[in-house]
Length: 320
Image 1 (cartoon, rainbow, N blue to C red):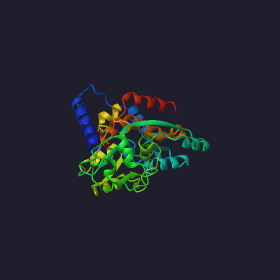
Image 2 (spheres, rainbow, N blue to C red):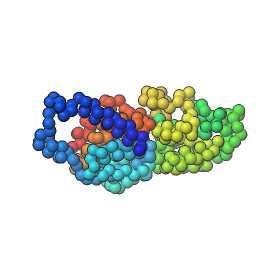
Image 3 (cartoon, helix red, strand yellow):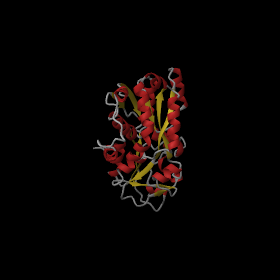
Image 4 (tube, rainbow, N blue to C red):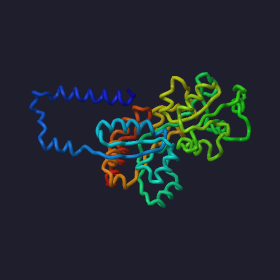
């Protein structure tokens, strides 16, 4: 059983036990369901399909939401691929999906392509992430980096980089790089806030699969990489997280913005016509906004303030 399934099923069991204790068969304060109540419950059951794709960073939240939603609406099939933020937007633009997950805001070029395709969309925030820089557990010298050092490490400059190039007191060993792929929103975000648009080191191993990055970093003492906070937490017994300008990514520093500039919101972009014309799509998005905070915390991200989810629900209602 997956972590979120265990936690949420335990919570549901606790709620059921509490209700049983408060309103058993002999409790006249609990009115029996009428035929009308039962009919309304039946009407609430939906059927249909909802298709999504996008960010591998956002995927743990969405996958958790999909599995929990399946317990509520067993006849609605929600599918979610993982093509990376850029790949997800391509499918969204091509009309292949109802929604796409993104670990960065939509680009102007993507907005223009959607407009040309006649696709109106709405942006919703799901959670906060702290992009985590990680190293091998036996790396004792690069546990604390500044943003400037991080840029010096990762920017392509035509040389074969060694740790001693960053600090003369560090080992004269070649740095081994692991990065999300170019279709990843995490790659785009790192490029924007750390590399300032300059080229990433050519020797970096790029992959859309964060598990590939984890395996590479854990296999080499001189490796460094980065990915979403949830993937660090999931592998923290095998990896070491780096502090940036003296700040470690935690729920508190990510939510407060203290873990800057690597704190960021995570998004879901939904096609307006799907919300309006497909009751299952509307219902899934409503369920997502109502439970995203809880699911984000369960899988290792940081939930938004309640008012943010309330704003999203109002926005969603306006699309019906």
